[in-house]
Image 1 (cartoon, one colour):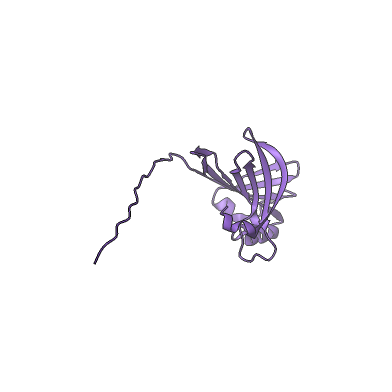
Image 2 (cartoon, rainbow, N blue to C red):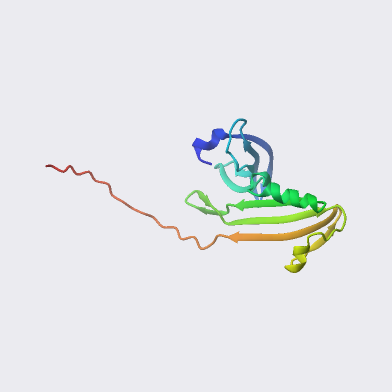
Length: 164
């Protein structure tokens, strides 16, 4: 996050945990009180050695359209479970770059309830039972960033005074 924006957020260290073999600090990042217009927030995994971000899990409340999705789920008797996770696993010259983004849209039902008719029409109905009820995995989208081409740009600056 850009230094000039850091004051718009409140940070809380939740725990320390390993993420893909790296010891990390897990921070909860929320908009600071009285900061209108600040939307993006969630949970961040940071490498305490260099303070680089390894993973960001966006709070679904920060996503556009989430309220509408949550209301639709409730009309079906379900709870919406949306996750938007961004991974930064590519390292180059001490900087981390995005490696993938994963977006999951699920609906959790207490009892079996094939209520969403459009899922049948689209042929995407995937309902599975768990200990806590039924889960409809409506969609999973993964963006993979690969094939980075790193290069160096060299320049020379000179000053020349033009006379009239």
